[in-house]
Image (cartoon, rainbow, N blue to C red; front, side, top):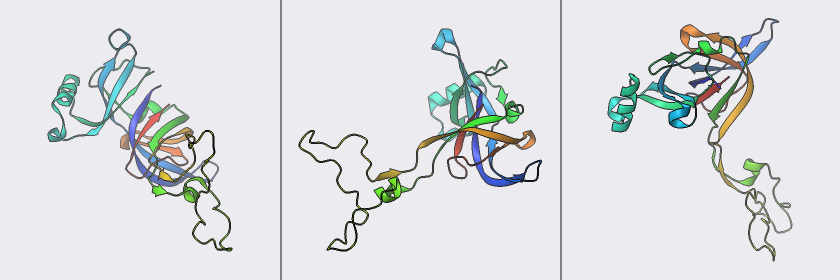
Amino acid sequence: MPGLLGKKIGMTSVFSADGKNVPCTVIEAGPCVVTQVKSQDKDGYEAVQLGFQELKEKNTTAPQKGHFKKAGTTPKRHLAEFNGFKQDLKLGDTVTVDIFSDVKYVDITGTSKGHGFQGVVKRHGFGGVGQSTHGQDDRARKPGSIGACSYPAKVFKGMRMGGQMGCDRVTTQNLEVLKVIPESNLLLVKGSVAGCKGSIVIVKE
């Protein structure tokens, strides 16, 4: 499906037609440059590769320089593939936020905020083990048994335990498009989007 790479600017609120204050996320969607066009004959599938944000020449590898030179564009920091565009795109073409002018809902994929290593109480909502009396004062936030038994003598895969929390790829579906501002490459969608300010997101129709 058609889409764009963008950057999360932050959150704000706007007033709807009936006077309600609606929370929304502001996204700088594009402009993106077509860096590669994939075809069924050559690549086995049809897609368009888009590049977003400038990358310094000194930070670009030799193969990347050749890739972008073939497309007739400057090096780009982020790349992603999309398909289903209504118009026929060629190398070097620019895709802007105008493609969402007539779109009512979008799906946005981002990377959620990282929270470091967390225990089971914060990560999974465990209630803790037992009570703090009766000689037990060091196990209030522990997970308890993780499944030790005679057979099978192992911990099952997927057991909820402490570990890295956040930094996951999260897709929020069916976000309502409130406003498109082409002159500033801005897209306003209702509600929240995964990720911190300045993080890269993928917006799809």
